[in-house]
Image (cartoon, rainbow, N blue to C red):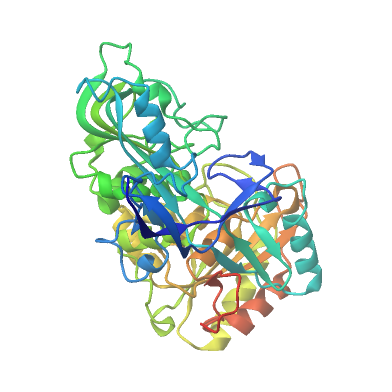
Length: 477
């Protein structure tokens, strides 16, 4: 057979001996696959060779001006001339070859499969009151006994790098969900765990009472019923599957009773009504499985902010609220992490605000004052800075504009970096105080003078960028 010269994309996959962190899983592995920039080369190809797989941008028709810069590339067909066998389109080809779906239109089948390749990025390290706080924080983040190092490369020039992140969407037909993966679970095999799998959805549902629908999205990530984990995990699934869902799509979102804000956000951001949030068992003509998604990436946070109508670019001059997140009141779901010298802290910050004479106001946050999520989003658009002990109330910073300042008091024996990562993804600055616990409830005593000093020097100022794309070569662009 005649041959002709064609141009194909070659992708070099380089494996580096570092840890990976698959979103939602608390398990690390020992390798990280990094996608290098494709280059064009001439090769000889037969006329009947596999056609090239051309990438597209996820949600390209609906992304906002900010999120489109961070959207992943999507490959939806298998090109065996370069594509690894573990890419979703090639998995689809292999699995469908062993099934009867091509002959039987009612048989379970993988109709579509998409491999998502996310842009690499770096985030700046936090701000610190002094070297003592910085040294403790850096040593904790880079401690190999913690899982943080598994999802990033710590770069010793003040930036942390996140690279080689991939996701997968599988669109199944004549499929169903009964119990696997486990809904709302943090266990191995659960949605967003490194070993999550959809093969059980291609088997018949044994329960004859299963709800039958036209289309369903499986989004039962760990604690998907809760406000905080809906935000940091479930939103990723809905955005990643955004091209495949519509207002008539049912969502399998976990077995527990969903919190009211979660129901509201499903409707506000994704157009899914409360009566379309269901539990198992369910069968669907089309079932969407997006559980192979990443945990830390700016695309998801920025895109969700757009969907919720967050005032990302509201000028600092229009934002006057200095917000304190207290755990000393009776408005928290979990106890502990109280500030034992809270009165002294608030008195000092009040004095600072008055001295500045910029119209700023110290407000103690109470979520019970808001009846809708739209009210919450509107309120947080006025926030200039937020400070307080570690707790889920910090998740509301997702609704604050860029350049908002976060100060967090973290118990050393419950050390975490969640709000450093998430605030940086949204272009917000973060100042941690890792403090000793005063008791078994992890209550803390705050260094009041240090907190006031940070606020005095930084409150209301536009900081240096804390988020940037990563590329290994200095090209001048």
